[in-house]
Length: 205
Image 1: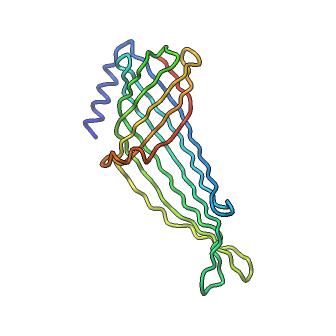
Image 2: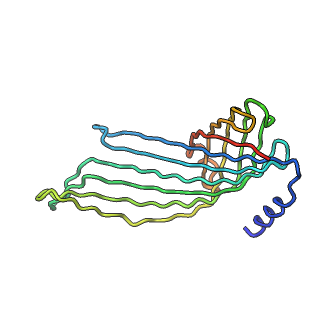
Image 3: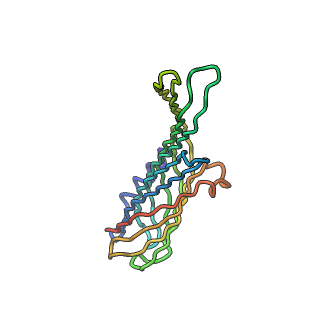
């Protein structure tokens, strides 16, 4: 990591005068209702930000950050055998964030109406898991809430992004992307972690 930091520092101070930069912000949202009575719910929100510094006309060094929160709520009731309690809700919460560095390759000039880009690089991902439970006392209808312990996992990952930008003004573009973030030791899982996002991109010098 020290060598990587040194390379980034050298890159920053040796940029050509005509280089340009790109700042992106994107969002993804997904909601799914399931179960026989559609009383269970899964909600996912993701936010993405990236900064790219072009050292060639179509090639840039990219830095990115993302955060995702997935909440899965099950509202099927289960009577606990031998007790006066019924499980009324189970909520699993997964929160993750990642930061990465890699290369971004554009396939058209920055002034084109449509600009496809492809990014690939290394990311560090931190994920927190927890499950909360809500019980009802069948005698007096009082509720009991039990908050689960949080478990944290750190993982070396690979990120990949294919984007298509539609130019709105000289510097501002509408951007749609297909993203993946998967374990660095298993490229076969790239297709298992796809996210579809939309947002905006700003070019400046």
